[in-house]
Length: 89
Image 1: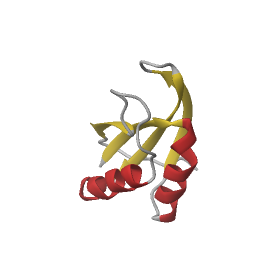
Image 2: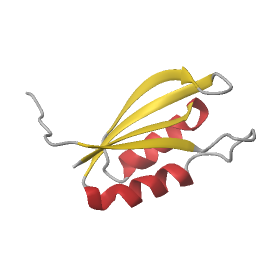
Image 3: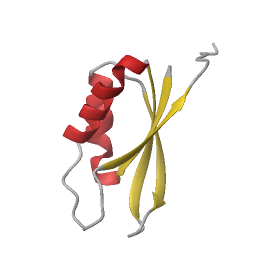
């Protein structure tokens, strides 16, 4: 299992998270700020099996607007190994 930490523009966050949830991916949203232009950002935490990484990246790219400024990206993603996944009830 992998944990994707994806950072997207706040204006793209609803479209991205809605698209991921529609395809049965679970997403946790965290508001954040940073980067070169100090624009509003949203950090998405997405737990997925390794074979679903490309699908998640495609959904993120498809649902983010084109960058407005030079050096800006649609999204930034970090992929970390996740040894365990536990739901506490």
